[in-house]
Length: 302
Image 1: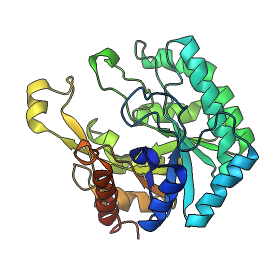
Image 2: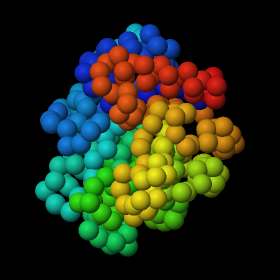
Image 3: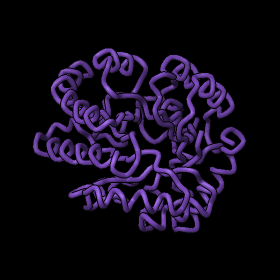
């Protein structure tokens, strides 16, 4: 396995500076963010280290040359919007940009694009699968033509009462993943697996790894801490009782996680995703977060 990080946490650095930072700190790979150049709609979004708007083979070669110069590989390109947004105009913008990210991936030397399936949070899972059947075949055809695999992250994207009860991503649990892979049995689609999202859903990450190991194409290393007092006060139907943390500072059972992950035969990227607000006040904090996470994870990813 290769240890890296998600570039969103270094939003104020240029692409070359991100790659230099990764090299200087001993990381092997980086997941590069590819949001459209605009104001971020939410925290940790809107970061553009590779602008794919009018991407050319020459630009792709420049990215590859920079990565080679610093001895760092590109694990994937990342863009995490809502391709099933209930607003048709916004949905089309999102899908159009996702297609550009897919087209750019092989030009920069990676075969993985990480994203969300999306969700209309006003509708049931069944209704969303009807939309998936309309929206996603074309995206997956584009990925197949480009030689790219789509890594679906499984964060429910439920942060506020406005997104209740479904959140903005339907691919949240084993039952949904199973159905998704049954719907697209030969398509280039897998999981960008992040154990933190399973902690607060009380889903057994080790069991999920054992069932879906062959479908894992990328891994995010992030922890999640449950606050038992807030959980007692508000119950699981409330919000705010779980918090993203650096690996080792939450409730993920990392030895069990990596034991199960290695049993699957997975040998790809493990990218630290920093969303711990105790470590994102300034660059020094973010650098410390990546160093501390790397030091913790190196006992599992040598």
